[in-house]
Length: 287
Image (tube, rainbow, N blue to C red; front, side, top):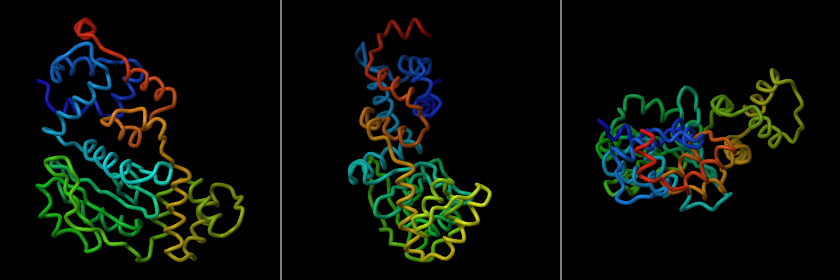
């Protein structure tokens, strides 16, 4: 039996890359058995939108949460090329579900109805040591417990039944000492090299094995407010979002351009495929 978890598979990196490569097997199967559009032919992008609407009512996965943050916060409230949104950003032994970098670095930790809160205190402790603001974005069923768990500085946002984001508790600006080692371990070598050069004014030309300790020493000798600024700017420079690709996607798939690694050739292929049409006979023949 096809359930909503199967429909959620449409929005995984594996399936989206498969569709870009011309593999429509899951797309066709779900269109025929679970999504059942009223009219054919139907545009491929509309199939994704129908699936997303179904999930919005019945199965709000982590991808769904990220999509709401991407569409309602990142794309609606920030200017293009002035902010960057990243997904699954490594912080120590944890991965922040998504972060938005503009004049501040803001972390969003997601807790769906299917998640437990066991690791939340540990996760928040690491995020507070790095980001300017931290929010927990959660289903209503978790909100009361989260209120009791979060430190004073951490904000809480509820994903409502109407799929809007409701601020339950504002996040406070964090201005405590940043953890330089936690920060450098979250960055790629080109990112922290650039950051160290901006802070020191040097042109750092060292073997990779010497780069880490040299840059870490610079960071350890630098004030936290300066680190926070250059941390944001280095990530924005080295991990920009591809807005041309983002703009080519339907609302249901915009988060995939942020969350997943999709090569340029697959991006071009996916954009073309999304604007193509599927006939019902095509589905029946392929299954």
